[in-house]
Length: 442
Ligand code: MLT
Ligand code: ZN
Image (cartoon, rainbow, N blue to C red; front, side):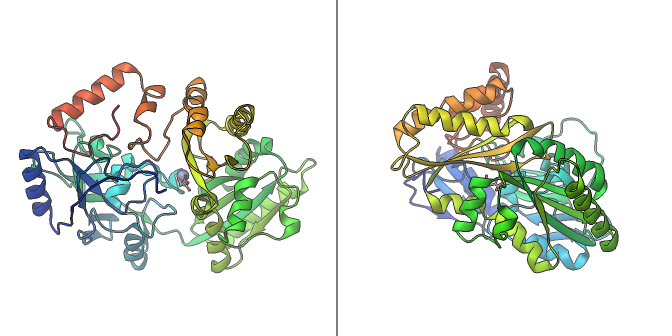
């Protein structure tokens, strides 16, 4: 995003957990701040220094330590790139239970530290469930070895959970034990064009009812961000008649055990949707080859890049009730208009996309695309957006984390008692405040 610039002079790239431990101990003794850095693909500035901290990159710790092809439990160094772990698992007929657009460069330690959500949370759940154990270097250099491969272990406090989503503020994740999933035998996807946003929820209900156990993703893409993806060449664009009159799109993916059965289910779904008296969709484009499958996903996975190619994005990653997605976009656009900021030279687009199936509320990525980051636009957006989220009892960060960008917004999603206990936990683990200073806590 090119939004945060530190003044670090030093990057260390240890090869072993012991080296990480020695570096951390050395820094702790001298009160030197450390920024643990994975693939550096985060969207809230969590992996970049705010001042002159030492950058500790996990990039040289990139080995798979063990894999058991009966249980599917994988133990890997924190610096393993997500895509390389998927490639490693493929011949064993397993898949990594997390998938996201940045998979080509993000690292599993960063994924765990940010509790990344991604595109298939609907199917495999969050990392709080799939991570079985962690190895963490604590702020004084102690190695906390909780790299168990047990699915069941009710022996007191589950410490590893504290590090999942802590964004490196409590210690550095150096190893991960995770339950991978049997690879689906058949993957399909379909891009559905909807005449209006109001159809998204009834469509979700119907898709869940008909596809049930094979549904693995249900992703919402509004028209304006779809157009940006096409403009910036992300994936195969649908034909002109397929997008005509579409106010938004939904990308549905199925992962099942039998190609014929799954295709039948998808075809039946499409037929019933098209033949309804008041169809919920205008049209549906079903991938008929692996290349088309990849291409439809490329549109969805390319949205972040398309937005950043278009301008400077103010990114809000919020949980709000599904039925409020459109309202949030409209209210934000109107608000910017009322401030005279929806114009050339200021804000160009207010767009939305996200993960519909992630819970009672959905995860909306509200992106405000401007020509430049300016104090005026920022003042118009904040706390405006956060107050809106608080009104809906949502979350100011559904999956991207807090980083440095949202520390001031934490209070809109966490009450004072919660923040106080978070601070106490931080103090307990890191009394000298060397671990990723300036991140997460206000
Ligand atoms: C996504 O869903 O594409 C990611 O969370 C990244 C983003 O919000 O831009
Ligand atoms: Zn997302």
